[in-house]
Image (cartoon, rainbow, N blue to C red; front, side):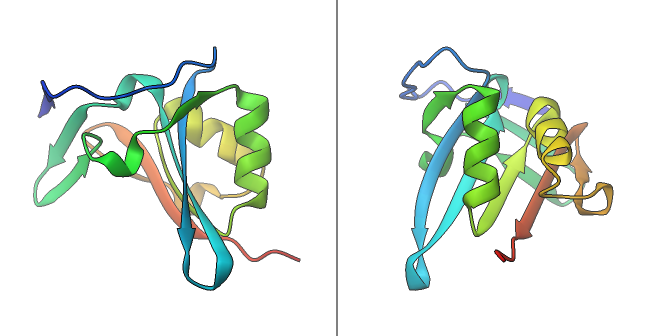
Length: 116
């Protein structure tokens, strides 16, 4: 079940295909929330599970795949969703296929990265 939220969502355009919002986590760590641009403002439900991309948590800056790859490699935590974003994360080897879950046809992953 996919629905659109009518509230205004602020997106800063930068010519990319993914939206990135960085969050400061405890201990100076960084959580990167990254989603495909087309997911912003949508809600996806399947059974008791829900992906809600209408929250301010995801309102960020549109970035290029190259920029997103750098951000993913340097983050401590990832909250990512969408086909393009998941494909890039797999290519960057910051997640594995086993990390990927699906809700209403939308792939997502939430991972903790161990920096060496």
